[in-house]
Length: 162
Image (cartoon, rainbow, N blue to C red):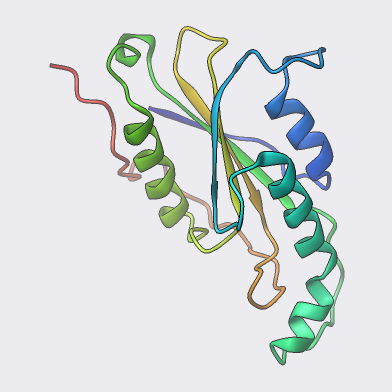
């Protein structure tokens, strides 16, 4: 499995438009399935709106948690990455195995408490998922700073080739 981290971004709308639709089109044929984490919905459009509302409410969440809303404000609320498997692993790779890898990666990134949406694309020979994360912690409004992960030491569940 190969992880690929996108740049931090500021637009949930743009990220969801890209990951939930076909390139340069308004169709969604390349999307195999979606799933959410730490959201009250499985609908990706509703999830996007909740993630936007959470990001916009960061100062109020900090205040409610007793945290001072000081310092520079970041607008880079979006963090996205992909996990891809080799085409040889495509046959027999299950949604459950892909989600286990996503959950393990979120835990490794110490982001398993954050709002996220998983999007599986089917437009390539290699199976892959994209994970869109809201960097704003819904519990206290703080921006999650992602640690640098050494992928040589990252242990994620992978498809077993028999």
